Image 1 (cartoon, rainbow, N blue to C red):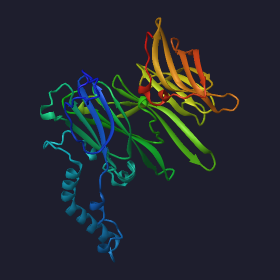
Image 2: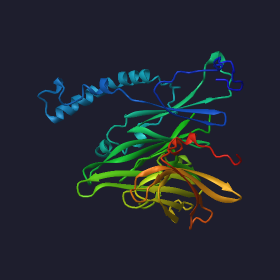
Image 3: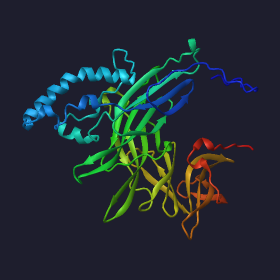
Image 4: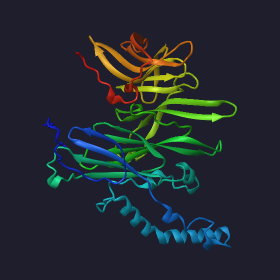
Length: 395
C-alpha cells in the first residue's frame, strides 16, 4: 500500500501490489528495500504412506522380508506421482535447478538405523519457505514478483531471526534418545543466504543431546560468523519433578563450500540461573549476552562470548521480580539496559504489577539496578509484544 499520502477523508489506501502465497504466514522482515516473508506448509503424506503400512491387506500372510520387498516396490512406483502432487499442492515454483531448495539428504547421516530417530523420524513434518521481493519495484499490473527458497524440517516453526544477509528459522521438534529411551525436545535450525536476489538455503543444525527450545525472537543472534542461541529445555520425572535447563549454544556458520553445510557447535554454557528457573529475557549486543531468568527472584546475567569456544560469565545481579524484555540505551555516555517486566511481591511471590528497571552495565562484572518504576496491579504488553515499546531520547 502507498502510505506516503494517507487519506484524511476515510477513503482506502492505494493498493500498489499484491500476491497470494501458499501456506501459513509466520513472520516477515524488511531489510533496506527487501521484504522477506516466512511461511510454512504441512505436507499431506497420506496418499503416499497409506499403502505402506504393515496392516494393509496386500501384505497379509507375508513374512517380514516379503513385506519389506513389496513395500519398497510400492513406494518406488508411487514416488514420482507423489512428488508431482506435492509440488502442485504446495504451489512450489521450480526453475529447473532446485538451487533454492535444501536437499533433505543433507540433514541425514546415511545410516538408516540412525535416520529413523535423528530428527523424530519425519523430515517432511513441515515445509519452511522464505520469499523475498523488492519493495521499491513498480509492481506492474499490481503484481508482486517474488523469489522463493525453502526446506523441509522436522517439528514446527517457532522463531525467525534475520540480519543483513542471513535468515534463520528455528523449528521445535523432538529427538529420540536411545540412551534414556525417551523423547527429548530439540531445535532444528535452517540458515538462508539473502545477500543475492534469490534466498538460498545453505546451512542447518540440530541442537542435539539434551537440547532446548527457543523462547522468543531475541534468543538468536548472528555475530562474526557464529550463531548464538539461548535454549530452554523442560523435563519431568516422578523422582525429580519438573526441571528446566537453560544454555547459550554457539554454532559456527560455514562460510566456504569446503566447510560443508552443517553448523557445528563450538561451545555451550552450563545451566543459566538457579535450578528450575526459566529464561525470561535475552539480548545479544556485540560479543556479550544479557540474560534474565526467573522462578522466585530475578537473576540478571552478563556473559562474554568474544571467544566462541569459551563463553564466560562476567557479572550477576539478583533482584525481586523479573524483566521479560531488555532494551539497550545510553544516557550521558553510560551504557544502560532498560528492562520491562513484572513486579513480584517478595513475601507472597505473586505477580503484583508492572516493573521497569534501569540497569547500569558499564561495568559488566558489577551490574547494578540504578532506578525502578513499579505500577501495582498494572500490566504492559511491551513485555511480550516488543513493538508495543519505544524509547525516545527526548520527550
